[in-house]
Image 1 (cartoon, helix red, strand yellow):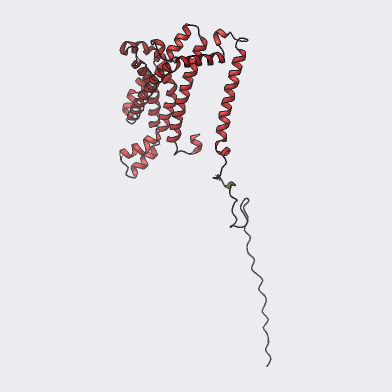
Image 2: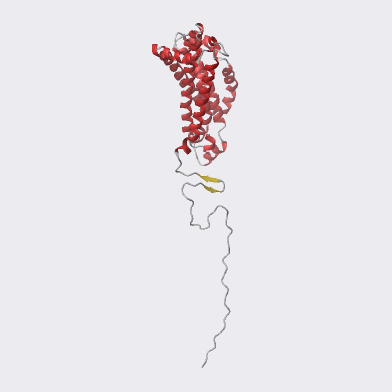
Amino acid sequence: MSTVDEMTPETPPEKTPKTSKTPGTPENPSEKTPMGAEKNTGQSVTIPLNRTWWDKHGSQVIIWGGRLVFVAVLLVAWQLSAGRLFDVTFTSRPLDVMHRLVEWHQDGLLWSNTWVTLQEVILGFALGAGSGALTGFVLASLPTFYRVIDPFMVALYSLPKVALAPLFIVWFGIGLQMKVLLAAVTVYFLVFLNTAVGVREVDRGLIDAVRLMGGRRREVVWKVVLPGSMTGLLTGLKVAVPYSLIGAVIGELVASNRGLGYLISDAAANFDTAGVFATLVVLGTIATVLNLIVGMLDRRANRWKPLEVRK
């Protein structure tokens, strides 16, 4: 008995649908980007962790190198032009200024007077900045009261601090106390106004959000208002650093027998231009160091902000 084989048509193989490949993505999903290469995922860029020393510090090296080159060019131009384009009696020379600093260092005149001015600056800055930050934070938290006293604070801030020096001499004498208080008054209004602006510019939406989540007033102050106002406070501190020096030196110029302000007055009376410039170099160095300290505090306090904001 013969069997008949049934003829069944062959089924064509199924075609796998082709997926469009996005440019920049590997063909095989298991493929990975080599270590050390940047991954471009749309808008975000992943920065590799194994960066070289130059990748981390290259921009700072360029900035500080540019600063050193600028200072070197300025000093060379000053040294070469003095006596040719300008009268040495009025401009002195960088080498003469350096010799005066060495001379004052050897006889101890530089460090004794620098220490006096440094005490006045540090104490005045601490007193003025602390009181200004505290009163600015408290009064700005009371909107109605702040609006009442705001024009009076601005009027007091507008007074020239040189005009206060004779009055402070009558009240506190010519000792260290007068210079400290004059520097503190100069610093106080700068820190007060900037702190008050920082408090008043805190995002009200964040405050409302914390309150909706059941936050108390103390939690709103410590977790929202205080961190949000740090930008204004630190701006005030940065601006106040040179003004603390100004206040202390003004007090020394008006009435004093020691300090860097006294050295400036004595050198100018003797027509010692090199001595005046030497004292200005010391004052500039003190201001630079204090600004670097405030800048370190600024970076530490603003670590929670994005990098592009901190720059």
